[in-house]
Length: 135
Length: 135
Image (tube, rainbow over all chains, first blue to last red; front, top):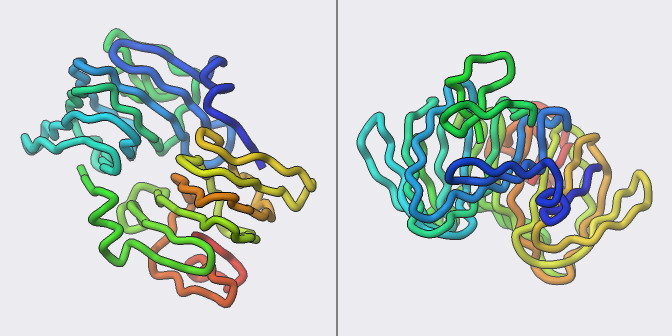
């Protein structure tokens, strides 16, 4: 059994801060769970354009409000506490937080934590090209 | 992209209520994410003895307080918002909620939603024996 807590993780290198968002990775690939689990905050007023070519991701909104636009369909969905959005098809999307939005995110395959940020503020998947983004 | 929300899911068969807990399964196996994602509430005053022989699970506490006992080591950990416990080794454990505890749970492999409850109030994994419990 592993037991961790958010304040300790936030004070360690499990926390990464980037352009428009920050993320605390409570579970990473080396925990051996087959997924990673992150508490990620997207900052109020940002426009976050994302495309995860190499990962599936689910995002559950814990607090905050904004919108997500599905660039494949043009649909815009409201984000508020209790909403889950799921990038099950490597969907290109834009999140526009009206307030800070705090989320619980699950990635499959898991993020390693060793990814290096690319010029978009995201980081590439392990052994993959730099256009693969994963928070 | 899939978008769901907790109130709609709670009003559907995605919500299951059992002995001492209830769970809203926002993602199940047939969503194809490789994990399932549940918002699970464990009720105040219960003693929940669990052993998932067939699943790995991570549990992030959103609200509420209580304890978890690792029956393998005898260790007791405090549960409060921001704590993550991870059953990475099919750990036998007991949760004792002092208040209702609301959690965000991830299962690998994913729960199918077709499991039938066994006599313990849990349900077995797909194609596996009835002593495998997964919320």
